[in-house]
Image (cartoon, rainbow, N blue to C red; front, side, top):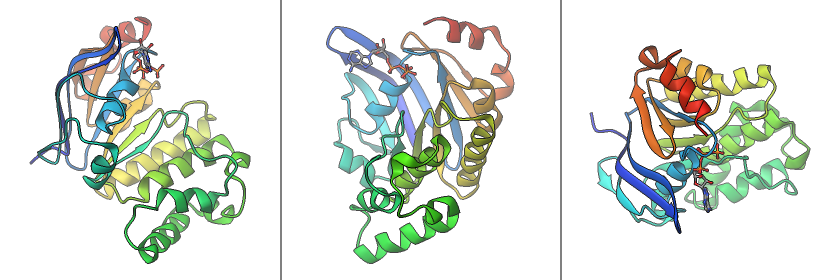
Length: 237
Ligand code: ATP
């Protein structure tokens, strides 16, 4: 089956800084690929290249079999990709509902966007209860749910989750990972960037470990869990 995302030999540079050099990565249909590695390993740069926010210096990015290398962010969204970014990036001074309204501005007709908001508030009842509350007043976990809900407003085929568990209490981390598994069961393919490697390996079908901008290891979780390569990749930064 055609992968939802296929990256070959991707390089990302910021001026003289080579953040990513020559990585290969694949997310299968309805699968979860974990992208692991220490701070500065190149995970976020990879994600930002996928959504067209930073350019690929070389290499290719294909989405559902179509070469999207160099395509602008709106074209990537239309191709079925959405991101829940590192740090969540919700609008703290807007309400929960206003955050979803803004995220849905490209979601077809106003009626479609309204229907999608309604469905998301059913799915995340806490967001429904707090729809009129300022997003900045939500707990960290609720803000993460809102960030995921924002990404789901475009009904993506591929969801990029950048550090969804960062800074959350353990119980909330479990909730967020439960949501990740539900989304997969619904057929959404996921690229999961995580600093919590052990948890990510529990839900992933495949994992890629980055170190210093390159692939240090890749394989199925059973082959990577507890391996020295994973530990050394986390100590490499
Ligand atoms: P973190 O978990 O800390 O975000 P990461 O694995 O996501 O780490 P990146 O953020 O992709 O790593 O960073 C990879 C490398 O690129 C690092 O050396 C970082 O300092 C550098 N880098 C990232 N963004 C920029 C930028 N805008 N300008 C210059 N260098 C950058």
